[in-house]
Length: 327
Image (cartoon, rainbow, N blue to C red):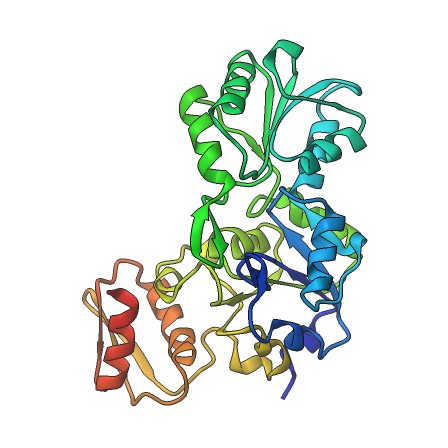
């Protein structure tokens, strides 16, 4: 049987929740990635660090990385700005110095105050974002400045659990200005298009832990995707996912890349007979294999019947698993 990764020439890998959580690698990820010849590109919505810092962190954690294979939303956000405002224009930066450096690299002038007459605002994740800088950005946006958000992730995985992401700070400015930003990162297409262009790939695979960014981002540029259940998205999220968030493959860990593709492909598992009856999904068959196998089999039927309310199983162990997902 064909190994999953062998069908692709490039893996476009998410970072937070896929390769690591906070400062620590997710167990087994380094080994899983090291078993193939595909080019690895690291595509991250997190705009808080420079590509070189991200690459150094990956190397410290045992991943094979070089700077030019790191594609960040800060780079894409800066490109979007440069395409829309005049060279040398002032851009108010809500984010880290790494984001400000990307603004400088495209020939624009980063500032931190509305008094410097910015024509645009760029916003990326920073743990130091506070009311003061959000107020400066609010004034600029309300005065007509172009607003570019690096990403809209409301949460960010850490070793302690989910914490505030850039999208939560974007939501504050959206509420205060009634303006929608131009978005650089996943699930919007600009970041994914930059990754595709830089990698020069012909058959890429997106790998990530979030349906609403990684998988939807893959849909935005019409390429295959693998959802790993090591980060944000849960089995319940999978069962309730809208069309634009349906992954090609689902796996518990990244080691699925080195296993036969059919073992991770959604809808190929025939261990169970699954149907719909009224508002219930009905699963017939014993609990064979792991829970992710059951999820891959159940998901297509759930997607066809998005209004389902319950899952009824003939086997007690299957019922226990689906009850734990839907609790």
